[in-house]
Length: 296
Figure 1 (cartoon, rainbow, N blue to C red):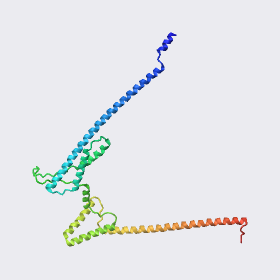
Figure 2 (tube, one colour):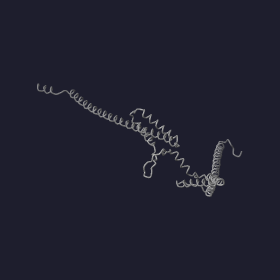
Figure 3 (cartoon, rainbow, N blue to C red):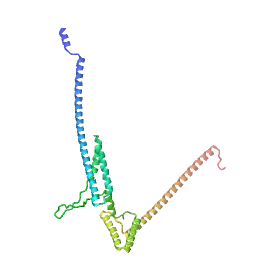
Figure 4 (cartoon, rainbow, N blue to C red):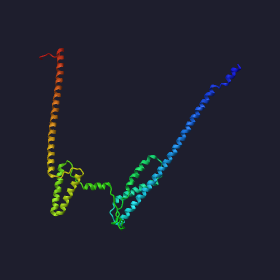
């Protein structure tokens, strides 16, 4: 009995075994959580460092662009004073607006939000297009620069101005409104003829201008319709097509009206037929019951 008691006493109870197992699992879970927390902290530290570097780079680029804008404005002022060149005020205003935006961005502190990085980078790329154009240097026969009182600079205009210039050098005689085009061509010819009577040289220049516009338009692949005879033929052909289509449309309208009239007549005939049939049916019933005597 003692031996059995000793063996039983040497074994641990089940509750103690379960508690030890649960303690071991809790310790392993805590170790995993500590590892994850350490990884998160290292990632957050790396992201903070990267954001700080991006902010520093962006501030440096903004400062560089601000300096370029300031130099460009100074060059424009100097060009105005020295040579009296007709620099457009719109360009200067645009530069000043860009400079104001860059100054406002520099005053703001970097928030560190990654969502705003792309917008600011786009603004920087747009502002980089305002680099001052290279100045023309006067050189002698040996290729050495010559000092001069006058400073010639290249003035860059915006795209709208260049588009307006292109339109002024091209012809507007295109489209399918042949009557309008014919009137325009006839007015041009009349204007050139009247001007030639007063001033032959001015009339010749105006005629050459119109010819040059048509040539430029043709070079760009556009169809220039400036031949009066062809325009007259095209206008007549268009009128004939219009008349033909009008006749077809009238015939179609008449055909549809006839079809509708026939359908209405057929419908009315069917209604009358059904009404007569119902009346005849009622009459037969009444004759059968003796209410109506046939022949009376």
